[in-house]
Image (cartoon, rainbow, N blue to C red; front, top):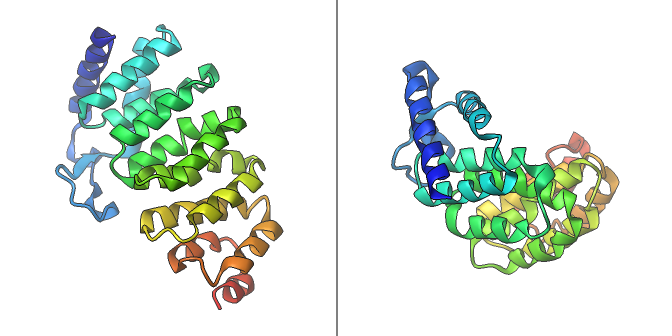
Length: 239
């Protein structure tokens, strides 16, 4: 549906221009190791306000129409478009079907190029998809072997929504084991974050899991994973 995506993009640009004032801007470069082409952009709260305002204009379209439009928007590689597509997809989580895993994997492979986009998709609409269709973890687990660093990171981060609800602990452990020796710091931080979230509903299980593997686990992942444990337990795990 090219006409819809083009109309949405025009609306987004119009709204962004209206809010593009110094007090609404932030330099995002400090959050990234990679050099950004256009590091100065609108603050996240401002973007969310814009996305909500724009969505109200198009929410009468069906979920499939909006998701298809989001996919075309992602292909445009325009400023703020990734965030809008992931934000709107999250709003449509009640209408996800089991085949949407193909869509989200395609997005990860083709439209995710940094950790922020990876986490926005993986902890957002993809995370809710996995919670709705837990059998999809057999698919996301395959991503742990991908050459694409963002697919590997996503294989862990997409479980966070479920772990916060006390779900999929064993699947999280299996994923962490598959990523345990990954030498990419973005992947290490991803599965370390996943274990940190799991440690809230499952403190004893996660402590034991880490304790057995602490000698092999990269220090970056380890530091992330143990962040919520009491100080004495953190010291013990860091030995």
